[in-house]
Image: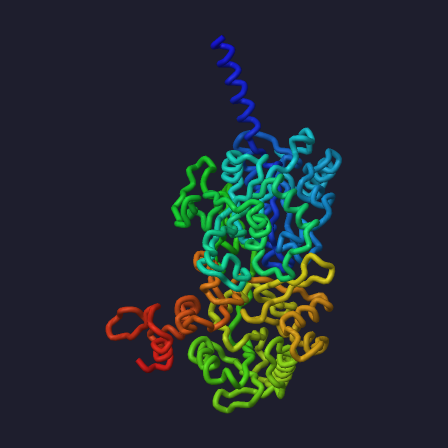
Length: 578
């Protein structure tokens, strides 16, 4: 009897082990990417690297792998026609047949696999240990949807080893948890009294959604009509939707989704812990690339996991400060309080800057638009500004080097050196329309994306010319940033998103995200010291200002302000009144 019990327990244990095992083809990766060259290259390199890891693992174990045994890897910019694919819920709003085909279905039929194998071998692109033999259909169903970004790094072995310990039959929502320190406008002031309890994922660190939960979310998106018109932060909005006012499922922190390669977050607290790779594939499974803009840094290269070498994927294009024209929107009421902040801080780092206002003020000086200020929208004023900018660039020979125009508000702060470094990845001769992307009515046929104006909008000259020629305002108070987007959409120009531009203040974002994603801009002077924001987050990259003002801590008689000192202290520093 004891022997029977022993063998029965052994069989049950084996069955449990087999049921908990996870194969690569049971994962579907959705890489959130954009249709411009730098993002597309990074996304394709990530896809190829994941597949390369699988081939290396098979080679080391002397195994053959089938095409149908590979994970399905979807690049959002290639697969989805929806302009709202970055927001995730518009993808889920697709028909159930579409979801089944793209995400949930078996990898490939035998015929398709055979055809793909033949084509790949003909192109010498398929290793000899990859075959086209299909596994049983029931073995190739997706168990997990993995969300990540083009800037993510994936350790496939670590991901599988960690996820096989999770129950994929349950409704699971796993990731690296972020929290709001205080209620913020970008999250519609959610949980105003205590926002810090609510978790939402950092997409770049990876998200795992079990298929039972995914199906429920997809059904709800298609049946419910109360989804917000505005899409701002996809990760927070997805978490709110999954939470479903307490009736759904909240994000669970998983320590194998990491901020960087060695930092993990425990599920019991928000403190970071160091987590090394143990050699068994149990360390950080997905983490973020470095934010360093140096062209020699690894985030611009494709790592080869077999040899440890790198190959260049990107040819930088140098951008100088002489090639950027800054156009600042202001009005007479702000001439004495907002404009001086800009002049004392980042404006010292630029060569071509103009201030456009409702009146001409020689003390700044400002250029009059002859447009009365409106309380909202500013569409007419903004289009006049772009017209004046274009005319001056064409007429003024000293502006011949200009490649980009940056349009911003009079309460926007920039890290100029960081902006210059970031622009190296773009082709200034192409249509560049860049900044922080928002979405409007993305679940409808009339939805669109736009670059929100507060964080600054970067245009290449070709886009400025097309706007001047093709864009008109429905009314003077129409929202300028949204009308610009609609005008450009009509002529086939879509916005390029960068999370380094910020529509709000630093306190409106999790600090750890800002630390790992070097900011280019912040917006709003409300309830903050703008001088401290510039010094702490932006000015450190502007070496000329650092040298000129000697803003250092504790060296001899050099004067400095602490975080707790008031704005007057910082203003005196920038005026040289120390």
